[in-house]
Amino acid sequence: RRTFVTTALGGAAALAMPGIRRAEAASFNYKYANNLQLSHPLNIRAKEAADAIAEETGGDMKIQIFPSSQLGGDTETLSQLRAGAVEFFTLSGLILSTLVPVTAINGVGFAFPDYGTVWKAMDGELGAHVRGEISKYGILAMEKIWDNGFRQTTSRSKPIETPADLEGFKIRVPVSPLWTSMYEAFGAAPTSINFSEVYTSLQTGVVEGQENPLAILQTAKLYEVQKYCSMTNHMWDGFWFLANQERWEALPEDIRNVVAKHLNAAAVKERADVEALNASLAETLQEEGMAFNSPEAGPFREKLRSAKFYETWQEKFGPTAWGLLEQAVGKLA
Ligand code: X2X
Image (cartoon, rainbow, N blue to C red; front, side):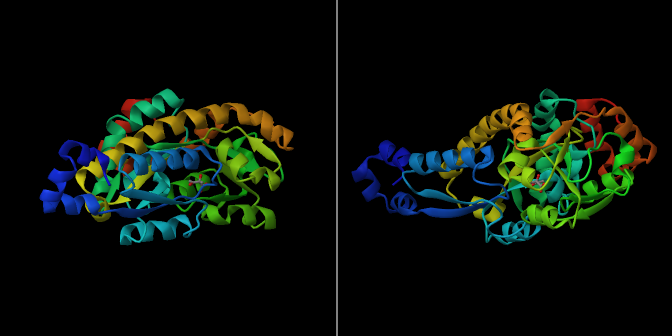
């Protein structure tokens, strides 16, 4: 029973009002899928939110979490979300761009210098513009984007020190045109692979390297199959917390408010967790045997410029979205 309804009405009043009584008895079991391990802050904070939501709705709203791509890889889970077979899904904006092109915009190489700039843009006009576009596809994005982090480059064979080290480099990238385009601009050999298959691909040598934030190297144990970690900080990536719009609207408004409140609050906590982890994990990963180096960003950025990467994507994203990005981070192209 939803105590926040019954306390206002009292038991007897609720019994006398069949409409409200019916709403009170309704309960919802929704699925939430994601691609990360249970130990990642995203899953820890999502679980806390799900518990708080169940409690505040008196058990009427249950969210069951399916971590580690249990329901399928990202591209497949996106289809399930659209069909309503999965109600909630956290997905990188870059991968969501296979459906909603503008959502890749935060991944433009070397666009964000630091977290302050990221949150100002993503909680501000750029994020609002992106969420508006997502809503045209039958999907609702919660207001607060969750942090994946600044991405670093790993390899089993060599450290990446200059753009020349990326030439011909067999690197796994998530399924997303922006990622492929960026590594093609570097002259690398990118292969699109869903995260669910990354560990095995690295282990068997299908690819030589990959790129991900430190929190993922640690929680997905990628240090077991990679030797070098180059702190390239080449893009900032985040997870939109998505809901199937129809399934979302099937929830009574008071439940929707409780869900949104707890999920957005959890996102803010998760951001702090990931930022702290990404600052401290280099040491842990070195103890696991990884060798770190910190290349200068300048030459990588220059390489993207001379390959016309920025001009190409400015044109693809269009003046509104690109203008909002540059308003947040300064001139790129
Ligand atoms: O697939 C990845 O590399 C990951 C986990 O970082 C994303 O979801 C984009």
